[in-house]
Structures are given as C-alpha cells and as structure tokens.
Amino acid sequence: MQNIPFWVCRPTAWAAWTIVTLLAACGGGDGDPAPTAPTVPPTTPTAPTTPTTPALQTWQGKVVIDQGIEKAIVCVDLNSNAACGSGEPTSSATDSSGSYRIQYQPTDAAAATQAQQAPLIAQIDTNAVDAQDPASTVTQKAFTLHAPAGKAAQINPLTTLVQRNIQRGASDVATAEQSVALQLRITVADIYDYQSAPSSTSATLADNARTAAKVTAFALEIGSELRTPLASDAAESNQQLGRLRYVSVNEYRVFVRSSDGVPNADGYTTSYELRTGKAGGVDLTAAQLYTASPTTNSMYLTDKGWNACNGEPPRLSTRGLPARTSYCDGSILYYGFSLPAEDVSGQAMADVLTRMQTGHTVLNTTHGIPYAATIDITPSVVGNATFSAGARLITAVSVQLNQPLFINNTAGDMLNAPTLEALIAARPSTGVVLSTAAGTIGGLGMYSATEQIRSAFVDSNTIALYRCEVDMPSVTNPRNCNALPNSSFSIATRGGSRYIQIDNVPGTGQLRGYAEYNGSVYVYRQERPFTSEASALSYSQRLNGTAWENLRTTLAIAP
Image 1 (cartoon, rainbow, N blue to C red):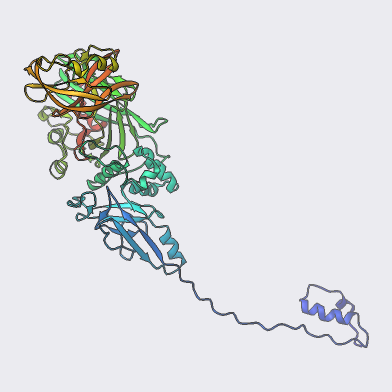
Image 2 (image 1 turned 90 degrees about the vertical axis):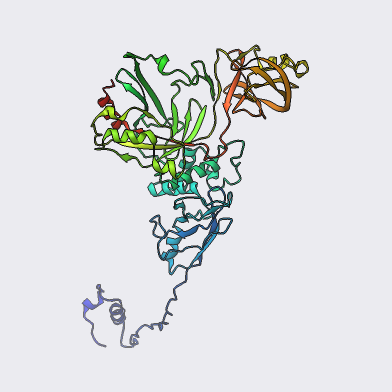
C-alpha cells in the first residue's frame, strides 16, 4: 500500500470530489477497493418556449349626450395624450343608438396591459346626431368626450369630467367620480346612467344629471376649460365687477363680487356682493343699494322661507367648471361656466368698455345666447387710460334651472285670510255671482287686455277660474264673468312656508297663486319655467379684480 502523507488526511477546503477521493485512502488497508467516480445523470434538452399571444381586447358601449350619439368615432387612447392618434384602436361611426365596438389584438403582455389601462375618446363632429333630436346635428363645433379606463359602457360629458380629473392627478377613479358628483350635486351612479331621468319638456326644465350633461356638452362645444377640483387644490380667491352704472363721480352705482374661494363643509364657496354708490354727490344708504326687486316690498320664497334677497345670504357655488350656484338660499339655482379669460392688459379701457356694451360676437351671432350687460357707462369718460398687467375680461355663461316664486308687493298683495284653509273656506264657487264677480278672488293676472282672471274653490283639490271684465288701467270693478275650465291645485311647502300651486292658469305670462307669509295670505307670482337648456341660457362679461381696480382709479371712485 502506498503511504499517504499525514496532512492529506486532514481535509481542507478543496473541491468536493478531491476530498471524497482522498478520504477513501486515509482509512484503508492493502485490501481496500479503489474509489469510483460518482454517476452523473444525463441532461435532457429543454424545448424552446413559444410566446403566448395575449387575448383579443374588446371595448363596447354607447356614446351619449342627451341620448345616444350617431356618427361619433371612438378610439382607445393608448398613449394617454387625450387625442386619437394613428395606430390606436378605433371604431367605425356609431349607429343611431350611439353604440360602438372596438377590437384590438395586443402583440405582447405589455401591449395588453397598456390597452387595459387606456382611457377612451369619442370624437363628436358637426355631423353627429343625438337620438333625442334626430332632425338636428348636435354641435356647431367639433369636440371630444372621454371616459376612464375600464368604463367603456358609456362615454358622455360627465365621464369626461371624471377623466379630466384623473388626468389632473386624482388618486383613483372612485375619487374622481365623487369629486364630479359633488361639483354638480348629482350621484356617482348618475354619471354613468342618466338617460332615464326626466327630460326637459314644454312645461319645465329638469334639474337633474341629464340637464347637467347637456350643459357640460355645450360648455365643451364653445371652448370652456372645464375642470373638477382636486382635494389638494388651494383656495382661489377672486373679485369681479358685477355691475357698474356710471354717469359721473357724483352719480354712480357699483356692485363688486368677492370670494375667498374656501369651500365650506358642504363643498360650497361663498361670494358676497359689496354695493356702493352716490346720487347727487351723496353716498347711497344700504337700504337704497340693497332694495329688493322688482319693488321695495318684494319677498322671495327660498329653502329657508321668505327673504327679500337684498344682499344676504351670499351666493354659494361649488368649485370647478361647470359650477352649481345657489342664490339667496336656493330661490334661484343655476349651472355656470366661463370661457378662457381674455388678457386685456395694455388695451385701451375705452375699447374694452365699448365691446362690453354689446358682448361676445360668437355667443351673440353663432349661438344666439341673450347677453346681460354689466356696464352702463360712456366709454369716452376714461380718456386714453389702459389696463395694467393682470387685467382680465371674463365671459361667464349661466343656465338658470328654476324661476323664483315671489310676492311682488307685501304692501298691496295681501288677501283677507290668515291661512290657505281659511281662504278656501271663505271663497266657495257655489257663492260666486258672475254678473258682479262677488265671491271671487283676484290677483291671478290678465286674461286679455280688459279681462282679469279670478277664482273660487270647488273643493280642497279643485279651483274654479273665471275671466271678468275690469276697468283699465286700474284693474278695478270686476264684473261680467265667464267661467274658464277648472284646474286642480295642491298645497306645497318650501322652507316651512305653504303655498297653493294651480296646475293650469291660462293665458298669462306669469304663474300666479296664493301663499302664506307673516300671518296672512298673499298673491304670489312666478315667471313661467324655462322649458329647455337653450331658453335658460344667458351670459355676461365682467372685469376681474385687477381690471376693476384700474377702472375704479381712473373714474376716481372711492374704494
């Protein structure tokens, strides 16, 4: 046997096969078998991997404004640049119901993920048609609607606000949805399905998500920079010239609106209107500046009861565009939005004031929106003055959702009854004398140039109506009455105050009825409701705080 050096029998950090071989020699005698090498199993070659083709991607749903939009084109915004680009999956034109379908085969897993996370865009061109009014095209100017990823079932103006909020940095879709719902005062469910909500009719303008969607679509059409605020957005204080009537430094009235932009617990910002003025060089009093309209004794029915609405409470507006605004505790509600502000810095004041006399050319001529001028001044009085840096002209559009119910004159419209029930009991139709109008109640307006509408009560649900001759212009001495068709009526309550709603008052420009106020019954009036979004539209132009400060200084009006 061969002698093995003693140091070999002390294993070191050699490779494993060396140690195994030498240890066999360390303990053996002359008869030990020779060591054998370990058996290594053969390696089986691995077959090459075949790439898995991602599943075919499909998007389908409807494009909607009021109802389905025909001839819209939908694309998948793969690169999230808010525009349909070449190579992005695109639908054919939507059908008469607004339906679309897109199919796309991703090349790999990354492309599939990108498609699943992509928002949708619907291109609305000037040939697009809304199923609600198939005889007309839906827009005079092309615009786009958007929907978030995973929300293909409906692409509409409200989903557009959601997607824009996501693009601005909303943390997720649910947060953006809640923000839009708060902004418009609708529910999250309304964003994706409002078509079953009541439509505006010949009787009234609906205050719901369906109307909000149509308002938003019109804002997109005319180029408003719509936005929904993020929770992280800082408050935006602002000041605007609400109204100016200027004859001289001794004869003027100024209404300036200001807001700190801080939302309250309900998400509304508050806006107050500061009024100042002079007559004959003497400062006008608060009573003169804040008198109710149309008379000094007018009262308006609000969510909190009757109010003169002469400066208090403040306007409440949600943040964002469109914004929902409540004037005088809900006596008037409207949606509002604005066009991009015009930079008038360096421009001659006289030129800007001249333009403000007549308003925005496109809104006047192309869209036919009534203009409510805020400036009554002879432009030449400002001489050659110009606006400074930061001066802006704001064009604000509003859609009024309701008509206020008001008592025209609390000094003259009172009836001889303490409650509505007492009035009903005191004027039964069985006691009416047609020849003298005895037993009837006046105040319901004129039926013709010489006939007044008067009433009496058949029962607790039916009111009898008459047309009676009167002396004009005093509207006195009613007589020779003729019966008109009866009408149903109901007693409604708002802000704790009750009033009679007459369902069918014929032939008058205003609706009339009877309401309880301050322990008596009064005749109330209400302009007939708007019957469409178009009829409720109006706009105004206002100077921002910087521009107003420039003008105020030029006119020498005290701050």
